[in-house]
Figure (tube, rainbow, N blue to C red):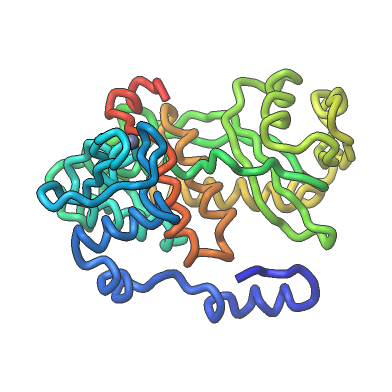
Length: 324
Ligand SMILES: [Zn+2]
């Protein structure tokens, strides 16, 4: 449903589960009991008005009876499975595992760790669960998303990370924690309520780094509300409203971005026992996806299924070597 801002907005927030309840486990099990049900749904999300050949663009084709979930183009003869050319391309995991992971990621307010997913899906290898989650996190960035607009709060922060030598889950070993720089932005409504957010890693606090983030995340002409670092004052395409922090704590003058940072850090520690430096961007993307759909958790499932059809395959090495 569409949430309109105004007096009724607060009423809706208070009774959010009445209007936006994520799909229950029972409903999920009923809708997606097997491979065929998942393939049908994926087909609908990928080709909402019917099959389109990825090779020639032809729209006439038929499903092959001998090959599962595969269509043959009447124009060029190319055979295309429903997962070909998607994030799921070439995966050894069944579609039911993918769909379960999408359901858990999109309906749990805290997401899920690879260790938890491995247990949920009964996977033998931790690596399979880890790779599945990273492939889905990569799909969580909508290539057509619009930049934040109007009034946008921006600030930087530091986030602790877990090093390679730490155990995969908390409990044992000494926590060896370092810090990474991040930057974030929150879109504010006319009533100063938070809307969509963006987060990214930051190399340093230089004007160029900050301008780089703002150029990608915030629409030209928008007003940036910040603590007034020099970097913000030299922005060319944005208006700037400086909140003087001085003796006042930054979380009072920039309340929403600080709430985002606080939630992000708590999530990182709670779900992952600290995020890893190499993959911080993926975790940020996951956090942003969930925050931006926090009033639309039911639709988030379909959104994520749809997004998996927009990107191609990526391998384990692509993620580990950070080639993508
Ligand atoms: Zn074709």
